[in-house]
Structure formats: structure tokens, C-alpha cells
Length: 394
Ligand SMILES: Nc1ncnc2c1ncn2[C@@H]1O[C@H](COP(=O)(O)OP(=O)(O)O)[C@@H](O)[C@H]1O
Ligand SMILES: [Mg+2]
Image (cartoon, rainbow, N blue to C red; front, side, top):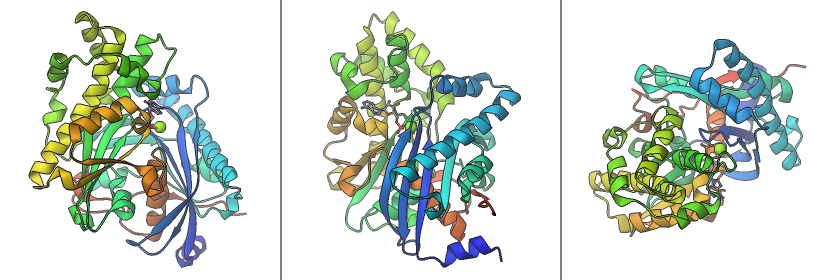
């Protein structure tokens, strides 16, 4: 038996770091948690969280590799990002006042550069060998491929952790992440892992961010605190038209990405808005409403199929979109009478949940615990997702 792995399984508490960079390309979220208890009754406490922002220009280079990368650019970026992910891990350990030796495992989602659910192909880069080399710790990475090999979409993966940490015996809950893309997890009251459903609802901040970049000629990357959207008017007729996008009518489970709502979609959206005579902030307001409407539309379907009264349902909002009050207000109006709650109320930062999730997914992988949800990804069965890079042997 491999020593480090058997030592790992014999511990009773573990410290794990989770690293996540999503489609917004705003930087790496890094969380350090302490884990205790056996699956599925694990408990965590959050020791620290940082967002390691990308150096100037890195975001654009990642975008350009995603859009028309050559194999050599991809290979270069893989090692460069590996080093940046390592920096993020070191930064969060420092923020917690912990030596790297005190960290039992690092879970790294990596940076998605391509996700083709139709052919079950996905690629996350940020070379784990580099993270392991720089930190000396075992790294679990490449979480999506095993689920795809088992017939799934490879996404979403966070629902496993939503169920572990946020399920409730008496209240129906929806956890709603609003990153670049938005996705929901359905956690019925007292439900088992088999009852969990999850899918991408459509754009999160992705279209908003891109419209803000165009409107500000690259001076702003996002609509800080939803100010621009709050100063614009939603074009309802145009919004109705945009809601006819085929993705919204697809049956769940389904996943979306830059392929559906990336730069090409946003450029066309912005041009259309201009042709309708809209001011920049009206276009941004309508992009924000598209996110809110598509999320609320998904709940209508969910509540109907699950025969649930929305009044008895809590919605836990996380991801960067939780910090946009204009979006929050639109969601509140459109999802009433369900109750919107901040993850902070459940002792979890809105921006930290996904990074926490990859720490826990890595922990499950090292213990050999299946950590995917077929009800979320559409796979034939649950698998142990994540590839292991062993720690440095000194
Ligand atoms: N204060 C804020 N006001 C408005 N939007 C915000 C704010 N903070 C973060 N965001 C939005 O959240 C996005 C990042 O969200 P995140 O959950 O990190 O997404 P991803 O997982 O795709 O990286 C930013 O691009 C921005 O659109
Ligand atoms: Mg992010």
C-alpha cells in the first residue's frame, strides 16, 4: 500500500485547499478548509479564502487560447497557469498562517479552455505536476473527465458538495451559483443524493461583463455593484426575443459555456441593442435581466415538475453575481415568494463556495468516495472524479 495515501485515510481531520477559476477569468479563488467526519456526514470549517487575481494580460491570453489556440500556446499556458495556481495555494496557506506541510491535499479545478459536452470532451489546464512540485503536497485535478467517460456532461460537479454541506431536513433549497455561467442545484427537503438535480440555467455574469467591456471601451471588466444596470431600462420586448434562445428550452440536465454565451454571443447582443436604439446602460440592464429571467424561468420548470410550492423554498445565492444588487433585486422580484438568502448566512462566503467544493471533491477522491451526482451530470453512474498527483518525496 502506498504510504502517503494510507496515512491520509487514517487521519481524522484534514486540511484541504481548493482552487477554482471559472469562465469569468477574473482570477483564482482559493479556499483553505478543515474537514472532519465521515462521508456523507462531513463537517467543514473555513480557515481562509483569497482571490488571486490574474496578472495584466493573462486573461486575454487565456481567451485567445480558448478561441484559436495553437497546441504550442496551449502547452505554454498549461505550465504558466500551473504556476499561478500554485501561487494561489501558497497565498491562501499564508493567509491562514499555515505552513504548506500542514496541508493534506490540494484540489485544483484548473482553467477550462474547452468543454464540448456533445462529444464528451473537456480540457482544464493549470499543470498539477507544477502545483505539486511548488507546494510539495498531493494535488487532485482534472475532475470532469471521469464523469464524461461514464456518459455524463462532466458538469456541474459542485452539487455533490451542495448536498453534503447545504441540504436541510425540513426546507427545500435551491443553491444558485452566478459565475460566468449560472447553475442551480435542487436539494429537496430531506432528500438523498439520488434526489439531487442540477443544471446550468444559462448566462451568469458572462454577457453582462462583456457588454460592460464594450460600453466602457475596455476600462471596466464588470458592472461593479450593478450601478450601470440600475441606471438603464430593460427592453422587455427584446428580452422576450432573447429568451427564445434554444438553450433555455433544452431539457435538463444541460450545461452551457463560452460556446453558447461567450464573446460571440455578447458582441451580437450588444450590436442588436444598438440597432434598437438602446443606450449602453439599457443594454447592460437587459443583459442583467436575461440572467435573472433565465434563472427564474428554470425555477418555474423545477417547481412544476417537483410539485413544490415556491413559498416553502429557499434560494441560496453564491458566486460573484451575488455582489450585484441590481441582479439580486431582479431575482427577488421574479422568484417571489421563494426566499433568497446569502451564503454568508450559512457561514460560507458567496465567492468561496466553489473553491471549497474542489477542496472537498479532492478529499473524497483520495478516500475513494464517489463524488459525482448522476442526477446532475446525466452520467450512467457516480464515479470517483479527479486524478491524483502524489506529493513530493524528499
Ligand atoms: N461587486 C460586484 N458587483 C457586480 N458584479 C460583481 C461584483 N463582484 C463580482 N462580480 C461579478 O462576478 C464575476 C466573477 O464571479 P465568479 O463567481 O468568480 O465567476 P467564475 O466562477 O466564472 O470565475 C465577475 O466577473 C463579475 O461579473
Ligand atoms: Mg472567478
